[in-house]
Image (cartoon, rainbow, N blue to C red):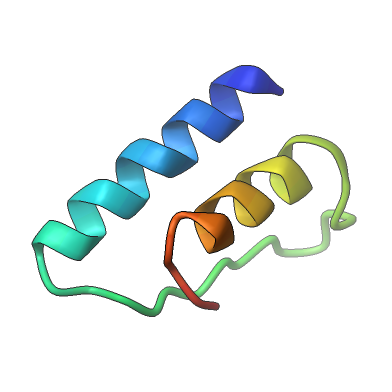
Length: 50
């Protein structure tokens, strides 16, 4: 879980540096919970929008 949060922070940082502020999270048929939810929540709190 913690690694997903760290990854989200790094991706958000790189996206902001590239001028990207909005992304699309395609989770397919996977349920929105666990690692996916932790990643998305941390990315949102780092400034990205979905």
